[in-house]
Image (cartoon, rainbow, N blue to C red):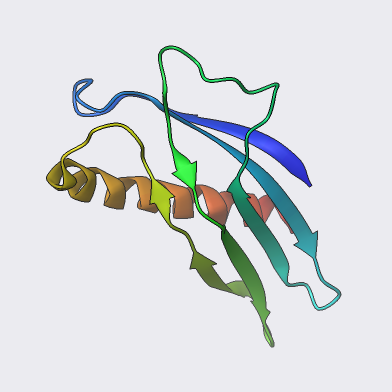
Length: 117
């Protein structure tokens, strides 16, 4: 279990301000090889609001990485998350920015799982 402060840079030529998220995260690996990462927003005294960031909010979220029997080089992924980016962003901006952010998340997750093996 850990507390993690995650930041994102500004985007769209600084139209979207940098964001920060503070979450408590549980990482667990089960005997069958399944890995769990579960998180939710938390306030923490070592992570006060920073003046150049907009504080976002992650609702309870997580990922299960499930080994596929007989296929050691493949993993089934089950993920769920809901994020409030905070600030005042038009929905059209969020809709155009968020898919690329999600793709980056899954790319990083793929790399992390390979290093854990």
